[in-house]
Image 1 (cartoon, rainbow, N blue to C red):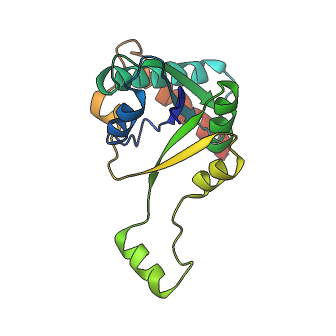
Image 2: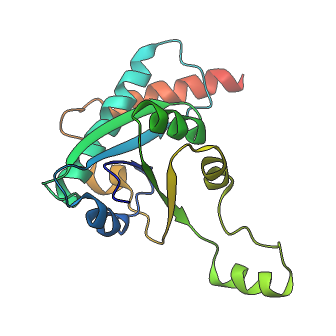
Length: 182
């Protein structure tokens, strides 16, 4: 099976750059569409949609830069930003876009945790609860790719060029969190 619509969910704060070498193997054909998805989950309710719009704009900028630097130019790349719980939004995006394969980067258990599970079966989860939910509820194929690196786009690249209001966003989110705490 050669999937033509592939979904790659990424966290822009913990982006595993080594996943792109795997993506290249799938997306090096002109008929492939690669969808890069970032899910924003805020534990607060913003009274102003501007916060969500700014966060989406910023995430979209990082996804576009990742695509430009790490995805083969022959592949058609689409960037998406969704709001809500990660597993639910990944599943909804896969369904909405009629995806054939979800490439799910997963930080596996440490060597020590795996070693302990030899003596205590079940002591260590091999995949995260998020990955379990996606595998269980997905209507398409799911490929779990073990990754190790964590590249923080925000920290390494700073705010995207088209979003100089980063500090305003941080202040608005912090104010909302303070209001929610009280």
